[in-house]
Amino acid sequence: MGITMKQNESKILIFGGTGYIGSHMVKASIKLGHPTYVFTRPDSDKKDLIREFQSMGAIIIKGRVEEHDKLVEALREVDIVISALAYPQVLDQLKILEAIKIAGNIKRFLPSDFGVEEDRVSALPPFEAFLDKKRRIRRAIEEAKIPYTFISANCYGSYFINYLLNPSHPNKQEITVYGSGEAKAVLNYEQDIGMYTIKVATDPRMHNRIVIFRPSENAVSQLELISLWEKKTGKIFKKTHISEEEIVTLSQTLPDPQNIPVSILHSVFVKGATADFEIGGDDVEASSLYPDLKFSTVDEMLDVFLKNPPKPASAAFE
Ligand code: NDP
Image (cartoon, rainbow, N blue to C red; front, side, top):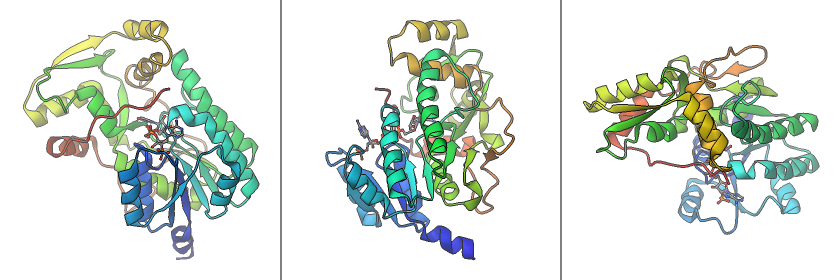
């Protein structure tokens, strides 16, 4: 009872809350009854979403991470800070960290990780450089002794189903397979990532932990994913493989930052980086933490695509 009361009272400030994944966190936070604050730029182009958040009860704070005093003032209003800023803004989080140190009241900071577990994976150089920036933020948070939870959410499910299967192009007969197509990748539904992020952010057990979203049944190979989709749609697709060698060459020849997405495909879908290591030590796997909550299965995500396909999205790399 005591713990539940405290969790519900936590005030949560979300940076990047208007974004692809951040918007699910804002909605989950409101749904779970937390006073929810969204930090957004004055010239953000997400006006409709901001109005929607306001109508749901969110408090909107307009500003930029460069505005140190405004940041400190906003932070003093809340308990928990989540950053879902995009990759090009990863190092800007050092400004949030500086303000958190000054504010002195923040009980938990979750930086913008939400991908492969960066402290457990090694990748091709362009993806390594990407991960290094995120690692730098983790180390700075640890060094500052700010309480944290680091989340590895693995693949955003709809994002990668769109990318791999092209369901929004129903006439497309061909599917590209990276490598043999047999490596397993973990796909999690964006709504679930939002909900689990808020749950772990407010969970006293997850203080200073790395939390990995890896429900065992959500680890699927590309070939399994295609076969599930073929069964659901009644279609047979032509599979075109791109070899590992070709992908490595692309990672070496494409200009920066176009060399990042191919290097991510290599890690996740050729090497199996989201599924191939044991979760041990202090690290936590999230799927059995909350008896009242479960991750949607890949099958359920594909059903969503059959009925009401989520729009394709493309992450920012510059
Ligand atoms: P978005 O690209 O959706 O951006 C999030 C928000 O950042 C925007 O809504 C905007 O908020 C703010 N923003 C955008 N540009 C700028 C800028 N130039 N300066 C300051 N703020 C800016 O983020 P994503 O949801 O794609 O990415 C969030 C995290 O998820 C990242 O860490 C990314 O690496 C990761 N990711 C993981 C994936 C996976 O499969 N695991 C897939 C894709 C991303 P506003 O307009 O309100 O200011």
